[in-house]
Image (cartoon, rainbow, N blue to C red):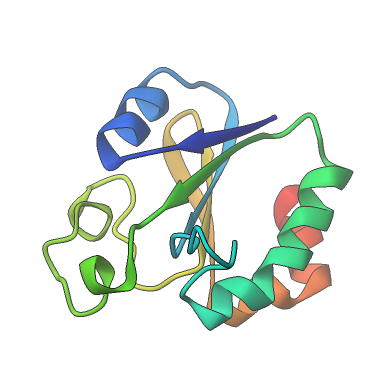
Length: 122
């Protein structure tokens, strides 16, 4: 099940009410004109993530855009960078939580490795 999260505050609300395994993807926001992220690594990871999500429809999946490039790049105070439950350093980042505790994390090119990604979802 894929849930689009529209803000760090919404992430916190959803995160606090979840139990069990939850996967959260933090990615560069999509340009409304092109439909693609401003982040080239995110664009590269999209096909791998979409396939993994389709192969694991029972998994709770949170899709979180970090915002436009200028609100993310070189912004140490960005809420997803400072949030105790996320602490994102780069996008894309995929985090696996169990009962609201982080148990694994993939970043950037790791997400494009099909074997690592499938193991992460399992």
